Image (tube, rainbow, N blue to C red; front, side, top):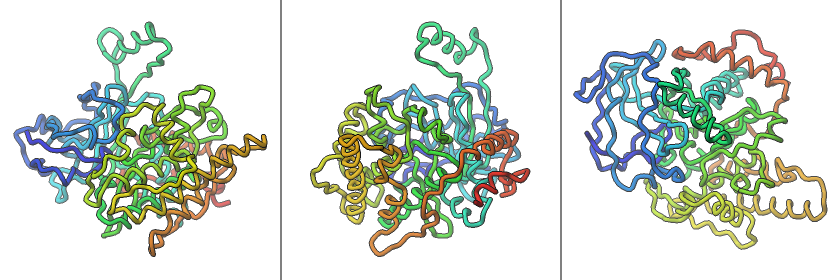
Length: 479
């Protein structure tokens, strides 16, 4: 069994090119003595979760999880699985969740049998709460919306490409099935814990490359500009807020030599309504990149997850990357190491001081990312101005808009900072925010029923994302 380093980016990504260990996965259609079962199986492969290795759940980055090579199992390698009408052969494990608590996510590379190209897809298995809106329904809704008007088609290059999805109910009873037994135990002895029933959720999408696969500074800048626009387009056109911006969830798609930033992993994304803006207070995200307000443990200061919090997360991703990495995708600095392991309380104060301190801010970027210094300064200045606006509003007891901190933190201002890198001006597809009316949420509910009807199907053509009937949402979007 070959040993290798897992990729830095555990989302749907390519293997780590820097690993010195051998990597010899079987070519699709090629036999292997490690194959568990070469007979095609249904996507309902198991009602039990895959093996999850417990480790410090506070550490989100694989570069910090693994200090040495980790033996990768070949349990899945070479297995044929029917995903709807498409037979795929599974390859190496790209990502395995590293904590006991969570969704137990595992991602495996996959390709059609006898495929000429290697590993075209990534198959994702996870165990989220059964009540959580599926990631597939959000992706499908976004792709369907992108086809409503030609000028919105650009965003398809910046979103995951859904190929298959299915929910598998974890059937059983409290006598013989661990999932049900855990719930019975928790409900009786820990009623405040709120244990939720889980579902096995399967999703297949095109395989993407990790952020750190890029080798030119300007390409990183372009990816951040792409992702910012796609993120706001989702918020405006689909009423979707991502809520988990991190290095692992910003990925890369390459088409005919062109680079596109992809906003990946909508597991924690949610629909946004005015009612939810006031009450939706679940703290979600990857801790090193979460906005500091969301890390405050004071229950009196509990705030909803707002759009500007995702902007702050994007700033932390840029800061973390530019101050720690080189253009070979290697971590060359220990700066912000504590962000990977610190408590939420410590991170709250560290980030609050970073954003609100009146001291001069000179980001300690690595030489390879020196071009980002001014960008990081300008973004941080925007947050500092917001801090003073907040203080003045409190002192004067004037009206206060928490969504934008009285207009100091906005999409347009953030876009103006990242739209240019040196002499390079990036394409602007979504120049300003254009939020849609809440009445569209009824249409989104219908879409979710539509995608449920397509569960278990393989999506081949654009027609699979077309609406089966005219939508009132389309007329509203034309307005």
